[in-house]
Amino acid sequence: MLEVREAGLYCPQGDFYIDPALPVARALITHAHGDHARAGSQAYLTTRTGEALVRARVGDEAAIESLPYGATRRVGEVDVAFHPAGHILGSAQIRLEHAGEVWVVSGDYKLSPDPTCMPFEPIRCHTFVTESTFALPIFRWGDAAGVVREIEEWWRGNREAGRASVLFAYPVGKAQRILSQLDASGGPLIYQEAVERVNAIYRGQGIALPHATEGGDLSQALVIASPQMQGSAWLRRFGKASMAFASGWMRIRGTRRRRSLDRGFVISDHADWPGLLQAIGESGAENVWVTHGYVGALVRWLEENGKRAVAVELKLPAEEAAE
Ligand SMILES: [Zn+2]
Ligand SMILES: [Zn+2]
Image 1 (cartoon, rainbow, N blue to C red):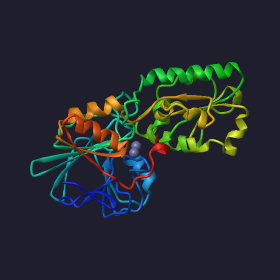
Image 2: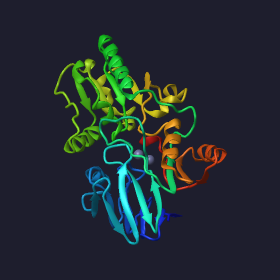
Image 3: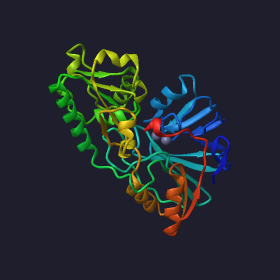
Image 4: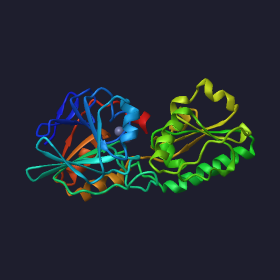
């Protein structure tokens, strides 16, 4: 039901693309990250909850329709439905059904709890198209709430030492997941603009997030900023701050040092290795298409364990920035 074209995954029976890399006539969008939602297509279909985030990405003028989770829409000859992927607010797996055959395109997903989005919903299908961002056995995540407690401890230690705490977190999803669980009462809370812009969209969808503080002693502050801000002039006002990064990539030894960070917090919005295997198992799919990450490692494991697996090479940029 899907084929790989230059612009990405194409469904001939429905005449649409899923998360196309190039402008197309009709794009179905799993979620609002930049490697999935791109400007320039003539028509978009995404989730009701994710619509505002997708609009912020593809532009005010874009023609965007949205569907509630679980609702079915006929597109061409295909029944299309969006189901929660547990990745970020409004993120979806896309279920396609045509002539009794069911495919599910996962987009990005995780199985671990996240107060800012609906939990991943296992869906039975014949073919499951899975991401593989962290598809190596070394990637195993601990409890995210525990990681947020570690962040609070780090902030407390920095306050006692009289230095600001700068936490780099991807501004769409990761920052809000942390903030939704953070005890923000310890000192001033400061958001870089890219983070606050997305916070506002989350609040608009009913997600409670702590508000930024006006004024206060900057040496006591927790600053939440996009990783792109590391080394920027904007950070100079915080003096000799402690710098940390919240990312699944911090699981790789040496990443923290290479990036000149004082701390790394391992927290990811993608499934870890056991999560990927669990999701694939629960899909019941006999065919698995693997894309978007450590494709080879996962394909090999699936083949060794009796699945039919296909490596799908799409023109997607590296995921690291988006994680
Ligand atoms: Zn994503
Ligand atoms: Zn992605």
